Image 1: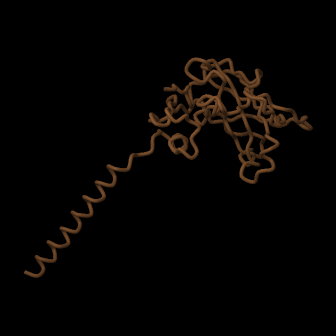
Image 2: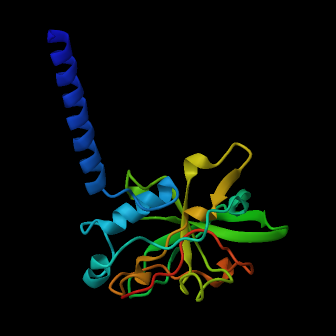
Image 3: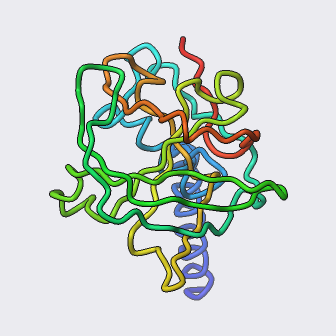
Length: 211
């Protein structure tokens, strides 16, 4: 009899725990996004302390729009470094003029088409322990102004990801918009004309529809 009572108690505890877990999982909304990168970006935009969104857009925010993830837009690029490149003031959407230099030229192929982008190095980031390893790639393409933001999109790569053969992986699925796409109060680097790709890059972040 005691065994039956103990089994009943154990079963009751298990059932109660399952109910609690079920309730908690319903209350906790899953992270939006098809990849860890998209989930991190959505999480940042959802957080009022880090989001560039205006209050009314943040209130209605349900997740950023992305093109479907496409492995054709993950490519290996050959890096040609630019030696002794001069430091220059990068034009922005405001009077701010951050200092950059051209780090190198990236040559790669997408859909049998040879393409090229210039990669830049922020001189301010070199003084920041958290970002000194970052390289910056702004670009426009044939979707700019239509399916993607007209001012272009950005991609970051890392110095540590450059191989001994001077190649680096470019994943256009992991692109992001300038904060100016969401809120005009921000100052954003303007994409240089030479970084236009005459091909549709249907990967990564899409244009944002403001409320």
